[in-house]
Every structure is written in C-alpha cells, then in structure tokens.
Amino acid sequence: MFLTFDDGPDPEHTPPILDLLKAHGATATFFLIGDRIDRHPEVVQRIVDEGHELGNHSWGHPFMSDLPIERQMEEIARADASLSTYDGRATHPFRPPYGVLPRNLLTRFARTGRTIAFWSYDSQDYERLPAPVLIRQVQADPPRSGDVVLMHDDNAGTIELLAGLLPEWRAQGYSVRAMPAGRA
Image (cartoon, rainbow, N blue to C red; front, side, top):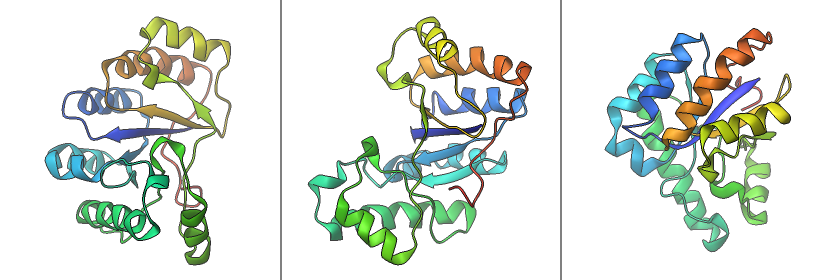
C-alpha cells in the first residue's frame, strides 16, 4: 500500500510520524502546503533526508474552485518552487486541497501532462476522533494492497492511529511505501 500525508509539515506532529515510519521500515509521500514549507524547513529537510517523497498541496490550501485558473496555477507553481529547493524537482505530484479539482484545472493539467495524485482509501483522521475509534474503523474496512492511503500529519490522533496500524499492516505482509513516480 502507498501511504500519503496531507497538510504538513507540522513541527509538532510530523517528526513523531517520521519516527514511526523509520521504526517500521516504511516510507510515505508528504503533500505539503507551501507556506508551511517556508516556516518549517528543518522538517521538510528531514522528510527528504529519510527517503520520503514530496508532493504539492498548494501554497495556502484554498478551495481551488474559488480561484480563477491563473491564481490556481500560481498556488501550485509557488509551492513547487519551494519544494524544489529540497529535492531538485521542478514539479511535484499535485493533490488538490479538500480533494476539490475544478474542471479548468483538470483541463490545464491534462493539456500539460501534469500529475494529479488522489487517494483510494481515506483514513478519516481529519475527523479527529479518538485513535481507538479510528483504528476500529480501519480494521473493519481495511485498505488493500495497492491502495493509496490518505492521512494528515497535522494532529496527534494520526500519530496514535499510525502507531496502531503500522505493526498490524506489517504483520499482515503489507509493504508500506511512498507513491512511486509512475503513480504519483
């Protein structure tokens, strides 16, 4: 399965998530918000140094459908520029905030061959329910091999959720890793 995190980097929550990933031999793709990248460069550098992938989650996490196409592209380009200082890539897989992808942006990406990275499994950690409740929900309807799992690295509940799930997934024989370039 492919593990992804949205809405970071967060100086309080991303480091413990990185610790858990390292302890379990897992990697992930982190879809980062541009203005947070500039505020927490040490966290972004650690993400890259530890072998994880970077993704673009826009500069300021707006509803893209509220913006004209020029502003949408500026949000994405500005975040790409900041991300590129860490991994040297000119562009990164883009995950639209809130999963909202306006038709004009989809059309622009289709014309340019730009990658959009959605998910196939939602952990629902953004609901900020107690971790035991989330763990039971995931166990009742678990991700499958090949799923792209959506999580968020901006809250303590995700840390507890991940701490409970990573050993379980490993015991079940899953390989937990970042999205490969071809899928990103």
